[in-house]
Image (tube, rainbow, N blue to C red; front, side):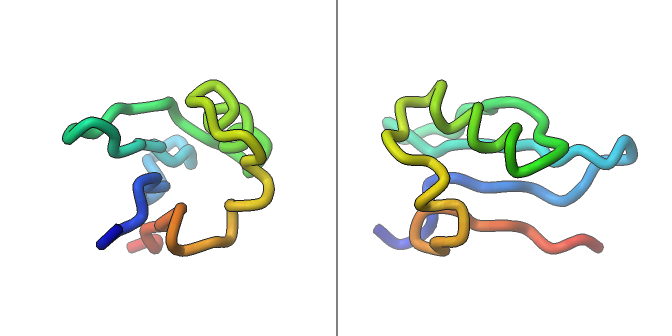
Length: 67
């Protein structure tokens, strides 16, 4: 894997961060996360077995910095 399949994008004006997952050759928007709890819920919905275990793993989750 050359890049993390899950991306937490830069904050929007509302403060939330768009979350996308790269799967089957395309990016799918999972939703807008306002907390790590939101991110865990999105990842569970996407079928990740233990999402809390990968939150800080850069092989799985790339967090885009704030501007």
